[in-house]
Image (cartoon, rainbow, N blue to C red; front, side, top):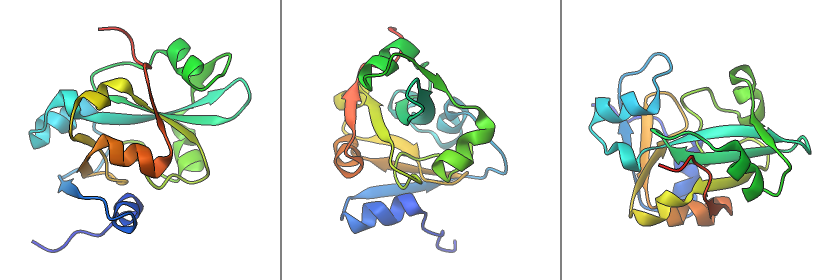
Length: 160
C-alpha cells in the first residue's frame, strides 16, 4: 500500500514528537462518527467528534465530544465563560476551521479557538479523533492533545 499523505494534524503531532497512529478508511463523503467507529472496528466510547460553536461574544469555540453523545450547549457555554453558545452552520465549518465536515480535527485549526475536550477523555489512555481529512482517524493520548492545543477538559455533554 502506498504511504498516505500527512495532514496538518499529523504534522503538528510530529513537530511535538507525540506518538500517534493514523487509521485510514474508504470515504468519499461525510460519515458520522458512530458509523466510522463501526467501519474500522474502534471502540465507540473512545471515538470523539469535533464540533464548532459560536458564543454570544461572537468568538468561536471547539468542543471535542464522544461520537455517540450530544453537546450540552449550557454546559459548553459555562466551560468557556459565555452566556450561551450555538453550533455554527455546517456550511461555515471550512471557513472557520479550514477543515471539511467529517474531517475537522482539534489539531491544526485555522485561527485561534478555545478548545474543550469532554472530561470522559480523561478516563482513557487513547482516543480517536479526526485526522484532518475525510477517511482518516488518529489514535492519540488525550493528555498530549490537551497540551498541544492548550485546551481544557470539561463536562460538556448530556448526562448519560
